[in-house]
Structure formats: structure tokens, C-alpha cells
Image (tube, rainbow, N blue to C red; front, top):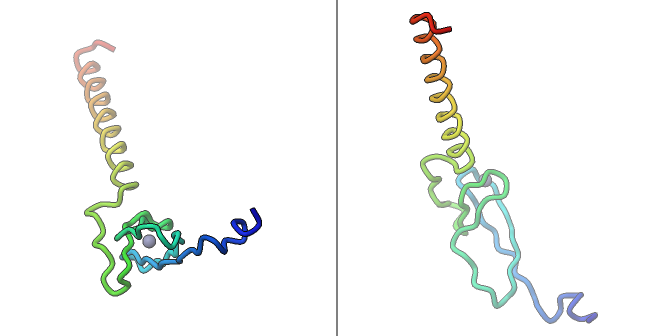
Length: 95
Ligand SMILES: [Zn+2]
């Protein structure tokens, strides 16, 4: 058990990835693991690549923001409709 705990039987490689915001992350991989082409930046969530000079292009919108914007958009749409419905109801004297 001692050897495994010291990691001597399973050397690990630290691979640097850079995202388009120039964040560097260095996940470590088992020496026999397949190194992925991209790695999600833990700081901003953008895909990071192994080539510092040409990180993967950021998706058109960041995942987190996309979801948040989507929810916000839907919510404001719903709110807008509710407000409109209420305004119309008031105009009709229903409230
Ligand atoms: Zn980043």
C-alpha cells in the first residue's frame, strides 16, 4: 500500500491547458491516461487547450451565462406578459 500511496507505481503527468482568457490550469493525468485535447477552465468555464498561443475559441456565449441569460430572458418574457395581461385587465375594468 505504501508504494501506491507515494505514487511511485503510478507516475502522473501535469499537463498545462490555457483558455482564451489566458488562465492556466494544470490537471494531472496518470501516465497511461489519454490526455484530452481540451479541458474546461476551472476559473471561467471556457474550454482550455494545450497550445498556449492558440487556445480553443470560446463558444459564442459562455455556458453559465447562456443558461442564466436564457432563464432571465424567459423570466422577463413571462413577467412582461403578466404585466401586459394585468394592464389589459385594468383597462377592461376586470381588476
Ligand atoms: Zn479561463
